[in-house]
Length: 252
Image 1: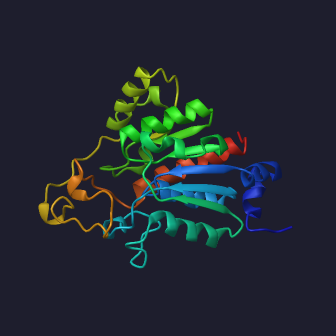
Image 2: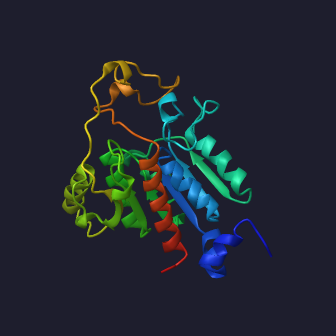
């Protein structure tokens, strides 16, 4: 019988599609990378998704985030993404968590029920905590390394964290994970040398924060405001989604 996933089934096969339909994936961070992860997972037939983020769509997200439009500015990213997923696949089960993942609230998430975890969060503290929780519960996890201040989307690679190079975030993650005895972690990272953003205060969120009312983290509080483009984080997100689909579908 022809379905919306028939073209995908032509490549993956019926058994893989059944595994994807029965899978529950948690995506932590629904931004430039995480939004495209969710988009591709929904279009690939993943049956259940948990979306975790406490940010609202901001005007400055329109340059790169799939959920960001003039109509969605000011709304929670999780809620916008849920609507989009259900427009794509009304049968999908979508749980939203309007909070940032932190070591302090790690026990509030049903990690043992997840079949896969996607780490698309920004802070090292949250990334490390996510990895440790995934290892503790024996759940597969894939982490996104830095996608900001980059222009060449062809430089992304999939590798174990200990085989990464160039990426400053990956360097910090290698050091911290080694301290904690973590032996391996699948990541998507770029070997492009990061570009320094132009120091023009007239276009910087540092002095012109336009975050929606009620935003938990203001740009004025951030240590650094990275530059970004439409195509780099999107590619990282799609690569991550591809890895999740192949792993869950037991393909290749």
